[in-house]
Image (cartoon, rainbow, N blue to C red; front, side):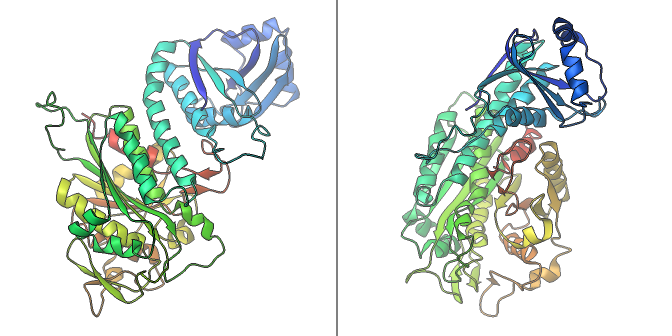
Length: 495
């Protein structure tokens, strides 16, 4: 993990120094003093590199004076500077082969966000590397952020560090191979978050059978790995009985629900072999929910929230669900399963209904790598947003925009009534797939049948859960999309 520290805005005499510079700005303050001490070597080097301060532009100057290196990074126009998190990510990426560096920041808030972005971007998963050298791309291990008010920056960063931990926790989960991370192991890792103050319950096979989670159990019945449902509660809203530990129930909580298919072969409706290895991250929705709950607990968020995740492995075997089978859901509705690869919605159906029945949440938000159709429609830039509540949709969209996890609103009832009709079954209450067209929409319509009109949103994150290339604050691989979004969304409800 990247070690972060904050210090007074006094430039060090040696080492690696990063200077964020705005477009067209003259060297000023401590930077001007530094250049004077270097006999204008900095200014001449920037001119030689044709550095203008354009957003993302970089110019490295080796061994100026006592410094090992000075790196200038453009922040763009002064009236529209680069986001501090992105700046921090750029710094971490640019200094990949340095062990330590210092960066000059402006305000304490900017300093904290630079540190946050650098930490997110410096994430690596090297757990299973034994023969391949891990130092081929040595990463930045220590970053000192120079700011006028280090103490204030440390306080601001402490809250962001809790979110960073949630992101890292999720990335670890999503990156793990399925032979290591199966439902029981996932549940065990979720239980480890009790140390943050979360109340964690785990339901196993027998409890789920007794509860009647028929659609969820239909997905797991072909696997040797038994399913789990995990409920995480955060009691953060102030109440009159606050002093009575564990005495009160959640009051009007927001509820996050995640699809956790730890590996998805498609079941009897088996997927093609090519790319099936990617299905280890079909639990990214559950991963994001757990990471978000860790973030809320870590920063002691002042609201009540609950996270519920359904964990299954979808395998073909002699005991697996067959296309054409009919099962009874927790809600009492019967479902005709025409395609066993449309399994995520079966998991969510039971968990969604249980969440509203037990906790009566103010809002429900589910996250799932649900359909390939959403990737066809939106690519890998946006997650699909489906909701039955305009106010909820607006809040989620704003939260996503604030943390660069964008959402795109998709059709749903009443615009989707014709889609909904495609789910009518001739022998059961509902079938689990519609026609080939509008697959992500009919999947959302299926879920809506299990929310009873409660304010609810469904985020289809199939295109955003995994990155094929590095981005500003996310290295290639598991993105933990949704953790920062849900945390930002939750801030709007804090007391």
